[in-house]
Length: 87
Image (cartoon, rainbow, N blue to C red; front, side):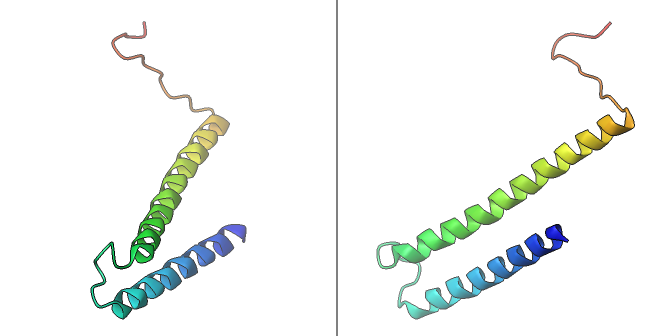
């Protein structure tokens, strides 16, 4: 239940932010000028960072959950040191 609420909030955030940025780009005469409207570009960079960081957290969470499930099931991966063979 908590996961679905979190995902719903994330999707709403992405949609609202995208629409807001699109409207703010349409308002300016030269929307791609950083000097004319730096706040729009900072918002765009912040939006991209939030999306990327959320995906990084998702990948790390899935990796950790897989490790915990493997540990629970008794599956231990081979730990090989670089350059050395386990005998």
